[in-house]
Image 1 (cartoon, rainbow, N blue to C red):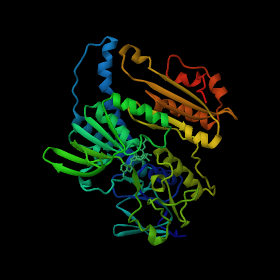
Image 2 (image 1 turned 180 degrees about the vertical axis):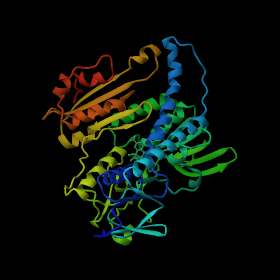
Image 3 (image 1 turned 90 degrees about the horizontal axis):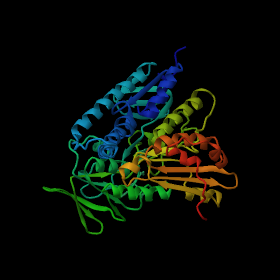
Length: 451
Ligand code: NDP
């Protein structure tokens, strides 16, 4: 029998979520096509998590050379070659682009180069070509958003910041979210004079104590934090960029990065024409199984603006395949997803913030610890680790763990398992610590903060 459609599944967008869904469906014997209008790999691999983390590694060396002296190493005055770093980073992202193409080719996913426009519940147009599919999966992610101000064309976003030809000596970063604090750490460590323009506070949505600790840490790194102001206009002058602030003051810079959020990539995809519900922010509306109101069209990842993290998009991809093909509707469970911010120092977090926990449970027990890590007892560097645990006293369950300090991203992963398993404070306390580590503090927190 001739199949009714060209494909069982057609995926629009070859980023982390789209590639995961396409290749696992194909491995399972489905006929799968995918289209992409940029490079295969998507934001995380090519313009986000991976290249960003490589720059974070580069930034870490700034302290290491100086700290080594306390451990008996001869002092050195290292220089840094930004262009070399960017070239090495690009070599790695090129390699990963190839890896992702192979991940699709291996199980027989057909790659269509170009932008996909949905023309009916079962058809997608890519350039001149139209393909039909039983299921269409939208996985087109998000794109940096820059507010509409005079001179916005002089601003850059994280996309361009990763590929600057030269490292800016004077840098303004607008925003106080994940991307802003990560880039502030990278550029300040490499020697740029960084000013952050933060209209409200750092890391809104995270536990408040993390933002406060990060504020102090950034200041110790020489970052200037301008709170409660915003840029009204940007001008290009022979001496560089000049930002006129909304309080009338002027700030000069060689580059201005806007890290003011990302918007779902849903425009000009034909969604309105086929009647797919799109929210006011451009997010594709889906039910708990990642299915839109048009039953043959599904969406996963940042395009749906649920929990915008790569591992969550991968997880949504696995769930959506069960819902589509296995007669097993599977809703992702978003509780206790551990996450990290690769600021300097990094943040690891899982579960509820204190504010969320108080709203959920009323009374909660809070445990905190702040200390200078062992490594810095010799270096005398003003560098601290902060940890916080939130417990529901009624059930004794640990409902939130938050950390800022070296290795916190690595530590948060293990805490994520414990919280997913519903671990209690008594079980944390009964766990033997690994000595000497920072992580052991999470199993030796004995003193509650006063109410
Ligand atoms: P966020 O939404 O996290 O932060 C945006 C920041 O910009 C906030 O501080 C916000 O302030 C501010 N802002 C928004 N609009 C304006 C404006 N018009 N003028 C001035 N400031 C403004 O976005 P990011 O760009 O940092 O990150 C986007 C996404 O990328 C996140 O959803 C995250 O999931 C993902 N990501 C994840 C990473 C990780 O897992 N480590 C790393 C990097 C990104 P206010 O708080 O007042 O709204």
